[in-house]
Image 1 (cartoon, one colour):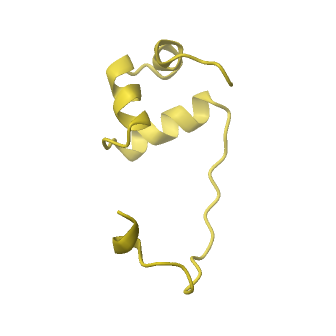
Image 2 (tube, rainbow, N blue to C red):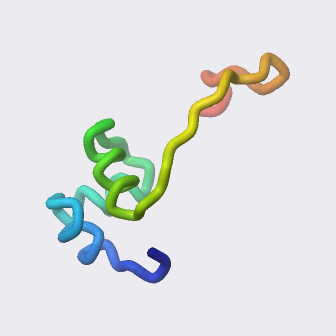
Length: 61
């Protein structure tokens, strides 16, 4: 859904526009919020085993 505004996404997810903005800016959020956005954007989330050759998660955040 390229070109969707935060307000449009907020309407589709029943979330506040400020919540979408916070999520977009990496300022936290809940799994429920993340899944609502993924669903509204018609995306899928795939998880795979993490490679041991990648940096530790603590080094990324």
